[in-house]
Image 1 (cartoon, rainbow, N blue to C red):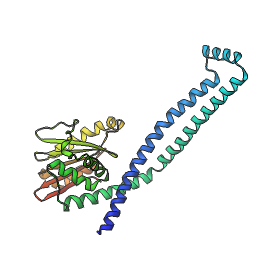
Image 2: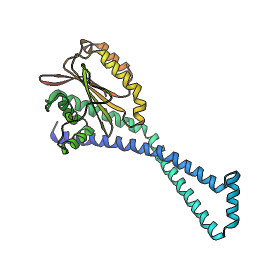
Image 3: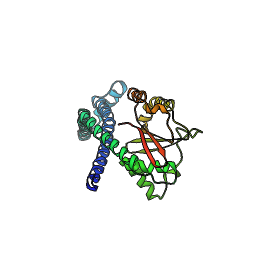
Image 4: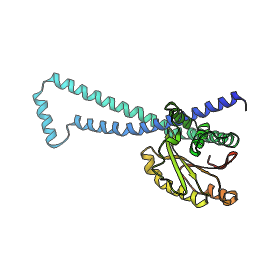
Length: 275
């Protein structure tokens, strides 16, 4: 691949990431605006119709004791507020309708994005030697070559002249004798890096999938849902070389992407990459 083609691919990949962020923020803002707008209209209608009970009697007293000039301008203000609220609901309702009807396009772009990820992963992790002083720095720096959102995160660290390893380890998954974990939040979601000190077994993968899938609903509401988990280890159990492993990975459902990376003296090799 020529340098020009590689640059074009990188720009296209970055544009896709920007689109996903825009689409997600747009959808969230639409959901957030429709409900308050609807409540505003209901509240204004209640005011304009006079409400019930003592509130209605009070409004009748005010009307009887006020002059036409005041009542005229109050009515105009009510109508303007009502029209504004209706306009907000209409605009965001149309936007929300557009977002829902464009799901097919969104899925197609996700497939293109996944293809970019897989190609970049294989190219960078199989043929480019990692750079960095620590295991986690090497892994993070390599991920920045694959994911545009991670690259943006890295640039922020570079401006502060900080290394990734200088950040605190994950609070969600404390360090153990078996592994150490690091997480960071990008514009597309959280990345979780799991560095194993021992041989990775299938039970380790299965447990991680179950734990994170159960937590994803709550984390997603908070905007901290895990987008991708990356395992790095010097050794994987022989099970990962069998067809049974591939079958299990295809069958087991998960709400995040999982990548398994092996490290040796020459660099990295990929065991499994989720599309």
